[in-house]
View 1 (cartoon, protein in one colour):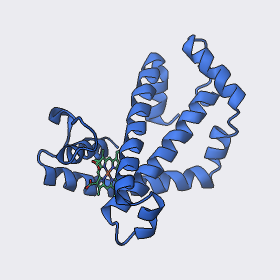
View 2: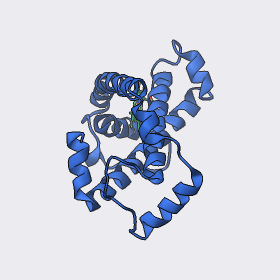
View 3: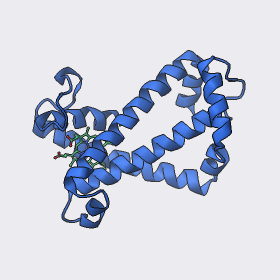
Length: 175
Ligand code: HEM
């Protein structure tokens, strides 16, 4: 993801969609062609990882167990508790409703960024997919906004995990 974001930002700078560019110091790929090479190399890593992750999550029932159901009332209550710093972190294996919502949202954003990526990478070969996003130009915007959602998720996620340090350890070790 970090390679995709860094190289994507360098690609964006070549033909910005908005009246700003990303500081070159935090982009990846040096020159534009280099950034494209990074983007198209790392995408395989991401897609293969993503397929394994989704397959395991679905087949082992982990997604169903951990992420569902998500009840709107609980999400609102947990969000309020999170803002007041009152959320319980006793059992890290049980996600609160806000976590569930964010994690499912991040997975959806990941799927959208990959599908919109394919539709701007090969708009002729994947023309049905590109049409689904409203055409090439619209798919570029979708690609960008999905990236932005992932970046916001990463920032909030890492900041919150840093507040409860044992979660960082659990994230890296998987238990
Ligand atoms: C299979 C996965 C992906 C493919 C095939 C793909 C493909 C592409 C292509 C072809 C472009 C160039 C668009 C243009 O010419 O304007 C691009 C740009 C970009 N990509 Fe990806 N991408 C993928 C995943 C990602 C991911 C995971 C991220 C970040 C989370 C990302 C972030 C960006 C950004 C920020 C741009 C620049 C947006 C623009 O100006 O159009 N991409 N991507």
